[in-house]
Image (cartoon, rainbow, N blue to C red; front, top):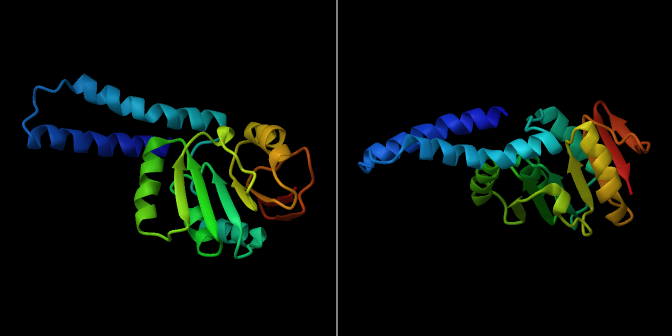
Length: 189
């Protein structure tokens, strides 16, 4: 939710500057505020259904990347990639890294970062529950407990054998992890 507050402040400043720079003082401020709120709705939905954006530490990222045991031809997905930090780090080690994000401010920030990062990275706007992960070799999750149950019920059965799932902070209670380091869990389909 913190990214929403930052986005509101930045969007507010940009909107006011835009209105005054182009002498658009006839623009109703309610329309601007309504537009900004509409942009935030998908992010609130994602926060409620899968988890809010909470940046992980570099140490936690290193643990997740180590447990992934990447191969050069791997395809990696990050479900709810936030600002894309983990996706961009993983992309240096694999063939293709894809992050899905539903929060519009975070998605836009990730897309801007994508312009300056490797060509094999893709930040995509989309609901993580409506994507196809059949080509995944590694999936990163930082989802709340109920979302992890949903992941196990809906996504897990569609993954190919050998897919490695790395969960940050929250385990899949229905199965035992192959390996655990601190609060990072490794599962294999």
